[in-house]
Length: 269
Image 1 (cartoon, one colour):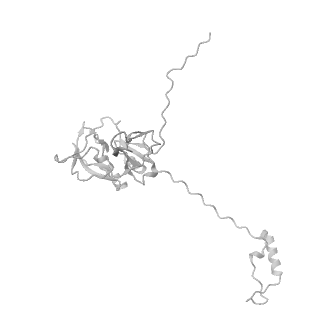
Image 2 (cartoon, helix red, strand yellow; image 1 turned 180 degrees about the vertical axis):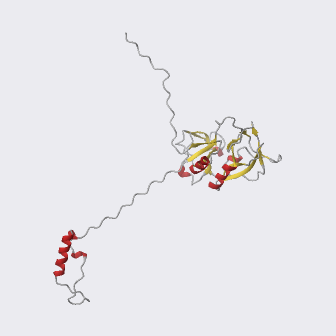
């Protein structure tokens, strides 16, 4: 290729120069790329192709609940106001997915007495009670998604808090759940329509969470949902009393029961 290019240049230099307007007579003409034969031109390498962007991994979420398998686990009562003249509206006040106001000082009882845990669900309302270690994780990683209310725990001097998830997100994936039975107009009050009567194998759609890190699920606020980052931080802190169940993976198919007894083959005579 270079030999052809050299020969083409020699031929061009031997040719009589063409005069252009404004050029000096007798001056050699400037060599142009168009004067070089196409097969003698140097080949340029094509630009390197950029690798396509990797698809982003969908967010993962987990249902945070207490580990009832712990032997001798203490049971906590529903929180009540220290002032006996003040009554709380409902046992579900702290699990409705909204901020709580005007409750004053709170306390709860422990029955039977047992070792303190970092995470517990208290009373019939399943109110999350957390230690100072757990509270610091939520305060640091999800300050806009939670409210931490101090609560006095009977016979314990260390600080405890009620963990209130202040976001209620409509993200339950009905089709992905193992079972999701909603209320209909024939089931009761109109305000219950669309909420869920029962759910098993809860699954949420991570594309509808709007980036929330801690929230309650609309229509089924009994579940406290946390992001993967919150889960990993709590596991790294080695907290006690908590369990996690992923709610963004496909539900497991029920196992088929094996036949109780196989038919006996007739013996050969």
